[in-house]
Length: 281
Image (cartoon, rainbow, N blue to C red; front, side):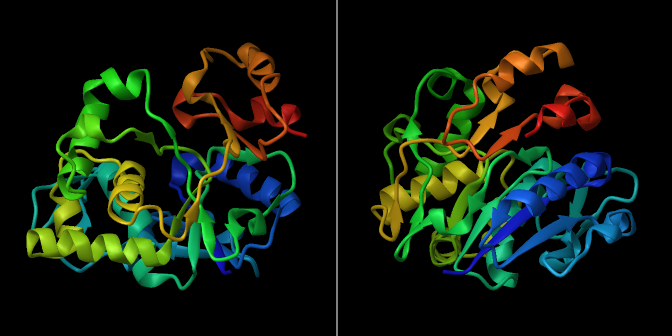
């Protein structure tokens, strides 16, 4: 099965992206390619990362002509069909838009602030024609936090669930995967529900989670057809760890388990990738 590694990035994350690609070259096998997606204005800064395996795609090439970058801000986009769009929302839409533009059976998403630490063969993402479907049990912050409730509420609306609390899965993870056929089915599902393009629907949404929307659709609309659920995560993420300084990183690294093929140290922690390069195997 053909799987493409997808990394949306931008100029402030260039150094982290370089480290990610360096470790991917060392550890990742079996991918049909690796696609970096950046704003057209950032293309010159990422051009040196192109290779036989790594392609560089302008974000604008995945978008319709009625949306464009606001000239005064990196964080906002102007739309002729919706209210102005936050960059965070657009980034999630871009992850789905690859299904309309990049030929593959599935996509594996690697943020530019991860680093691979062990061999990672794309074949482990598949069991025959079934794709890995990252699902844990929703608990803690995902049950109580208002923003999570908003994300789950949006997914519940389009997955014919009575309310957000009826969705029991947690679907957000690094090295997440999406099956192209399921993504296209989700797009058509949104269009049938709203009578307009799926991109208009999502770009006109103030807040949503692409992974929760996709996960809930696969679980509650498609009954997990074509997917299998693994027992553990592939990436050890800083999301749920208290890291305030580089001196906190060794304790974080000590918690890596045998199933982790990568680590994720969030860019918003403001740690320079050179500060932890020496910790990466």
